[in-house]
Length: 278
Ligand SMILES: [Zn+2]
Ligand SMILES: [Zn+2]
Figure (cartoon, rainbow, N blue to C red):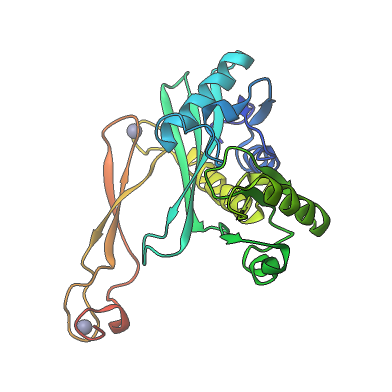
């Protein structure tokens, strides 16, 4: 393990250290120094009052850098999430998580990724009776809620709602504040309030952990990883090329070494063939 006994800062809030720290410690030997003397909400919130600092990757990089600065360490870890629609149908709520490790001794950064279905539901209601069906869709109370007057853009809100009493109180509060008698409910997307997101952060950390232990055969730097797929595996039935990969392209993030690893399957299943199973 390249990072065995390495001290790395982890600037994070919202309980993400619970999934990130043990994994990097056990699988990579990293000693995580949890840094909390900086409010990461300054770099963006999911509650729309502060827009995110740059892209998802730039925001993660900035958090890692701040953690390294505060701790004085040359290695830093941070994570950043994003929400959009799924890449297949474009309809379902989707969550992308990334966990970055910056290593200033080797001048590299390695990034773990994970994408998965998000628990991100919302509904506009007029009174408490209308919450019933929504609570199931929102996976409440294991997943917390945010309540606002009027609509999703109202600057005031109650967050971290995780029981029916506080939900009822928040809805009463929002109705009094509302100009239109409307209340907007949505899932709280902060990691500790959203176990679906937390599970996705764990997967991104697993991806990072694997990459940290994967060494380039040429220069021995960590972060040797799949960067591309060569597609066109032929159909077993009709021999047409499919979208399935023939080989994985592995690249080093430090030197220019690249190599192809041919997949074990010789042919594609006809169910994946555009001609046999259109
Ligand atoms: Zn075919
Ligand atoms: Zn290399």
